Length: 308
Image 1 (cartoon, rainbow, N blue to C red):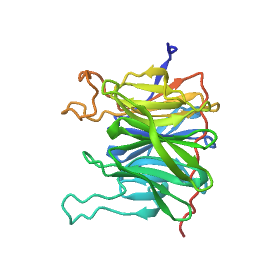
Image 2: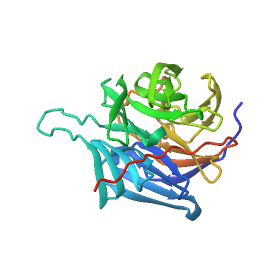
Image 3: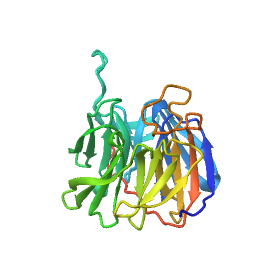
């Protein structure tokens, strides 16, 4: 039985698709985005200050960059960003506006920094299983880790860096890979967890200091903790059905930040609602925080040099 938790609402910004929370231990700040409105937010707990720091281009995911600023996975590439007046493209592939239905190959949904300073970013396209998980390396190389994805989503590594997790929300599956730290290659893909259609869809995720996986369940209104064998250890319920991602933060990494999304509110079913979904329930759009008795661990930083 899961313990009882105090769910604290940090910011109500009516996010259409709140995603990508990232904690920066150096500044003690949290960053997160609303993918579908092109907004990026910053929360500073010590000041109880939450503010919008970007408006415009859609941000699918982000990471803190060791050489300054943030690395952003946009809907048309990878960008180094300090502000809306100070940014540089690392990889850019905009959609061809002259071609009917053309899409950027880099329409990112979720991103994360990886070992060695790389940037892992997954693409998706509504209703099509053509998404790819890319790894952008500091030396400029780009690898494709997985393809044929419905909705590329949350990622994480175990403490020994021998195991990599990746979510495809389109198939309701979190996959488990063997990870080679020397080559930074992921191999031997197999199913870690596959949620039934009554449980919602696995979305953004993080891995704690005990190598348990925490995944937000879109449509399930919860964050679920799985042990290394894929068995549910606990779940935390939230006052929003579309919980979208989770990230540990705070000075001791025991504050769990959770994003949510109001996508689909008042409209037709999105197709991701679980069987038996309550369409009158509150979908989301807020940032939440909950204090837990388990410690998370710092996420990696990208290590990209700013182009001159």
